[in-house]
Image (cartoon, rainbow, N blue to C red; front, side, top):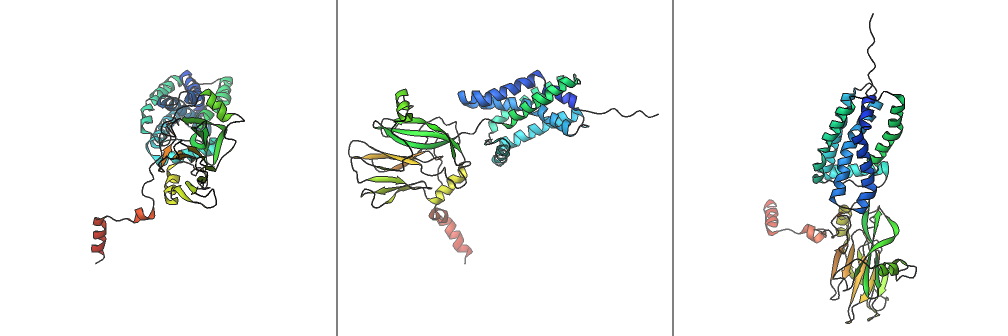
Length: 378
């Protein structure tokens, strides 16, 4: 008489791994760090904490899901796959920009706006997988057999771990949204957004007492003046004029990184400053998710401030590209985010170089290249 083979169920052991105290601690740390600590203490430390916690939590989560999808899968095989898949996926995503972009798109589709960056320094967190492996070695000795204990892990820990891993910290792309003058001081308002949306109605302000040479945080009274109902800016201002020279006016060009100038009080206009559309196309590729039609890589608002010597400056809020400033001598400069802390993304608050983007630059040939082409044409 043959004896039936015992039913192989890997779930009890993998569920024990998911419920190990170190795994649960990693779950709590991941949630607290992503949604509280990163906002309060932005920087490399909180970023690496999420990597460490995720590498401890993700392998048992993957193993549990595998044993639920394939009940006859041995627990040891599921654990090995969990550790291996997480290690390989983390290494690839953190090592290559293309993989990070694909992962960001996948995470955004699952849990809303998400950002995953390729950063090889994050690979320093890989030893956390050793802790996950140690937890597995301990947990496999005491598989969860009791029905009530299994239900707790299935109905509480599994959904919480899945959400913690899928729901990364919110994406906050810096966005220059406001430009104003408060008591002869320039005020630059920085918001945060995703795609063509800007979150919140109150930006973070930066102030300049010297017409844009240096920038500082606002005082409490300045914040109240800028955000109050009777503040100097009631809504986006797309046009402004010099007080000392009323005929000199400026206006933003909708949908472009460009400003036009009028010398006759607005009767006629001509270009004052512009990023060419070819150069703007370069920026659209450099900035992540700038909107379906690049709405956030465009001038949003401007303000004009007289300097008291018959000259003036113009501050322009340009969305994801930060701010541009016309200095008193008439020269223009892209400033980025005026020394504000914007999470080091994507260019540490500085404007990226436009590179060779005009047709003339792309078609330029060095003497050596031109000579080579001439020889080949003979």
